[in-house]
Image (cartoon, rainbow, N blue to C red; front, side, top):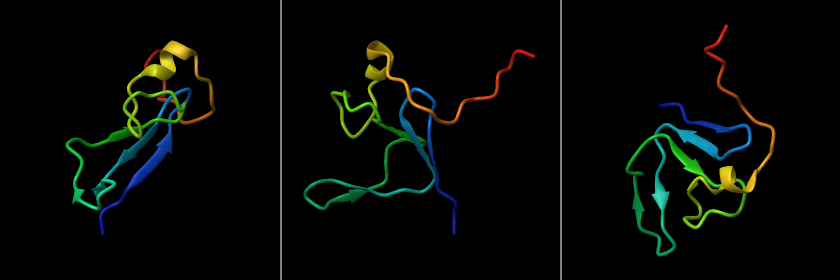
Length: 72
């Protein structure tokens, strides 16, 4: 079985990567159009449950995974 990775990103959304199936309120299921998908964690997205970048505008802060710095 393929692996699904779910991780909150530092000061940002929840990243979901892998084979997922999205189900809309009417019960229709479809694979997402892209992978990974990003789910809102700040509660302010106008495209809930998806992230629209609003967390950057409002200064959302929360612990989470941080990409390793490419600066050494």
